[in-house]
Length: 233
Image 1 (cartoon, rainbow, N blue to C red):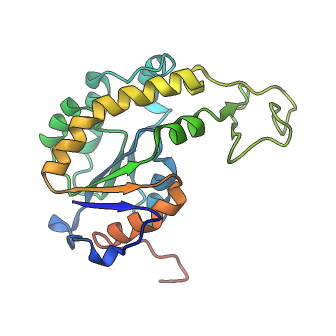
Image 2: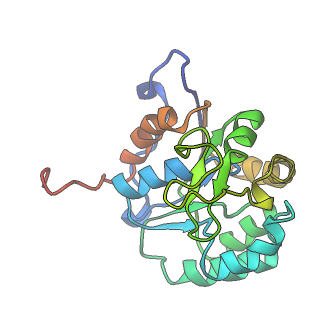
């Protein structure tokens, strides 16, 4: 296990990274409680084109919507059934799980079909996550999403293309976000302890994902080769 606090002194070369994964296939997981999207996009672009986890569309998204709108976690049996079916088909592929497992029961179900090689834990302050997630607003007719901090509309509260009013979904309102984050933290604690006890947990602390990613990239590059662009090949 290793811990990196972004911004602190120290270098990754001193961390006890293990080189390579069994049979050349890496099965990994990122834990962070709603703060992992940017890191996962970077992973897919640079390391591996396959990601499983938090998706608003498809079967998981449809089943989860009614729970998320009330600030609740999706029940174990719902998400576990869908994820196990998907993962069993992809045993011979690299993958990164995002948002699963969230509970000890889900982690035990995952143990029955595979063994994780690496778990990344992003320790982002509660208030930072709440503020970031509460800044989402959408244009209902088109589905366009704005973030008032990172991708604001040209005119506050108004869609750039139509001039129509933006709305905030129930599950993006501060109260719902705070409730969801607290439930996640409570449910995830035994999962984190489980992977810590196995020596496969690597923790990274910071407030900005784009600053955390280079450290995570260094770790992942020691496990699987990065994807090269056409110019690099």
